[in-house]
Image (cartoon, helix red, strand yellow):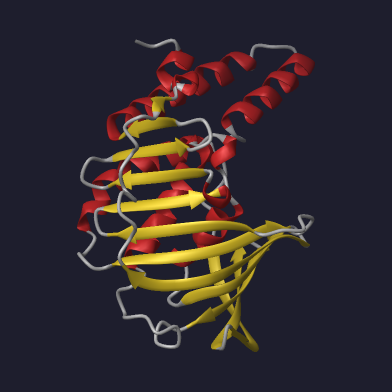
Length: 275
């Protein structure tokens, strides 16, 4: 199953898992990130609490709101004044439909001549993601002998390896060093899993290097403060966690503005030709 398809299935599973989060104060995370070639950082702001979560990306131009109780995701485009809604049943139905569509198309490519088959498989890979036939990827966090200090907070340098490839290098602080209670990051870690699982469903304009940095939060025990992301041996992105604190989210943070129109341009059912 391709990475995009597995993300759809994982999203449906997460909608039923997330209600188990314990009740606690909201946690705010501010992440500044950029591609190494970009001169300026882009701000990602996160508010997460048991039952609901919000992520503002691209300097606040776009937002993602997730309601645990309703099992619904809203992707907001503030410049266009539009919203894309994705619910639990849609995620499950889309996952099932896409699995069937991809399986059928890949089966038919086996009947094509070699040149045409290669071209068809390349097109399918670009549409659905590469077909995964190997074992699940192995994630490992490795310690180094280096220490650092970010915004006056002591941290230790660690690395995230996937299979035999380094994907990230980061400076991790303990929760106590970051002045956070033991359960402060529980909703943020749930959001990290959620953000990773829905990334393949989101329009390109909602993707964010800040979300890529957020991925580390559910893989470590402490707080990653500075993060370098790699592709192969090349450093491609960097992120700085500017602030992690508990507090009261802004009024209306988890509410979709009533005047926003439904974004029907990317309705999945229409793409698949369904009802």
